[in-house]
Image (cartoon, rainbow over all chains, first blue to last red):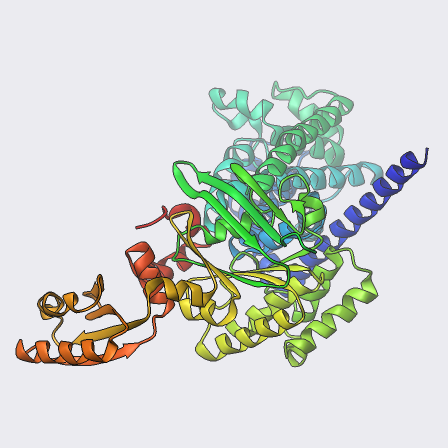
Length: 282
Length: 339
């Protein structure tokens, strides 16, 4: 009996210590953002430029493919938001590669701390940065005319979706960072990984404008699923009707939410254990 | 505490086809400063990384403070500290924040972590810089902070991986002073170095490591005795004539000697009759009209020990140091054993 209690106590202490380690490292990583504001500033300027580029430069041309009921900015912003979340997640890989080359990971590993805390603290802190970016982008979006056409509930769900996507990609980046161990390599690799997901999707242009061979990929592409879910949650029936009219009917909102969640969990289930494995070995 | 603080038996580790450790045996007594001396790529860092649970050995056994480095890794991390090229500080945090963070990660209560951080800062003369980001620290300050971070957990055994590599002479002396103080406190210390004088001055016992093996072990004096008494050191003015000079004087000693064409120096063990051999050497070189830059009798240094043990000079590896530093920390993996 007493040993069971002791074991339980020890388990409880370990859990407490693990949470404390996680919080210590989350705080440390968030402090980095505060101390190096250029990190967030420059990764914000780029998506803002994207918004301006698409809305004011390409927008006119792309709008021709859309019905008058859907302003291009309402079509575009869900794509930009998801893209921003995914690109910001790259920072996780950059940060870990930096910690590795500077020897900080070695220091952490020599300490009696929870091994999972380094990765959990990093991905969480970077998700806070992603949230910051997403809200900033929404603000910019409102300035150029974007609106949530559905309820507050749908709007919150859409934003939550974007954040989970970002979180999933922090693990992709964590794996890449730990495997490649160099900041430059991570940035290049992450761009290469992200590119076909973000650009060969419905994020920026309607699916009907793709060549037919690419439509197959664009349809199953998780980024398309996430972006379309976001659109249904912000544009509502108008977007559903439009997709039917061009011959690419979307599943019901329930199914879309399910698919989005499944993709999110799939990314997490693949990349979290992979990251932990590489972390243990490095 | 009669059992050794560190006990290493037949430790092996390979990275791909590179054998970094080929059966290392070590024994460190509690309270001792143990020096692991060798050139880059000898296996020093790999040994330290295994003993601090950062790496798993392929074969052999190692215990630190009685804990097995593989089976009891978690318990072991409570009683060790690691500093030097294998560990680092966060540049974006202040000195205080760095130490406080490490204290918290040792699971010390928040208030206690702050107290310890302050006392470490004071001890290492960093109180004035406590609230400055580590990024703004000089190399010596950063190294002191790094060493301080390894002490926050009050470890019984401390590992210092090349604690003075890359430091200017003044910071190096400061670091030596700190290490001597730690030694007085009774901390068991294992330090790796490629500087022979450093091991000579700081370590109670020294293991010379080369090509993943311990090739000699003992006190500094014991190692010097192995080379034998005094040495005659001759440096010629014209390095192109060094082999000619060597030919005429190498036979003077009781046997052996080293010729270093890079420095232009010839060293000969002289046994008991130092002065006689010195006089004869001057006479012969004068007769050959070989100009001397320097000639002297001296006690053997660890340089001589290294040279006579490995057949190559320790400095040889120093040329790679700069390149290695640039490449990152994993030189033990990239460099195969002995040149």
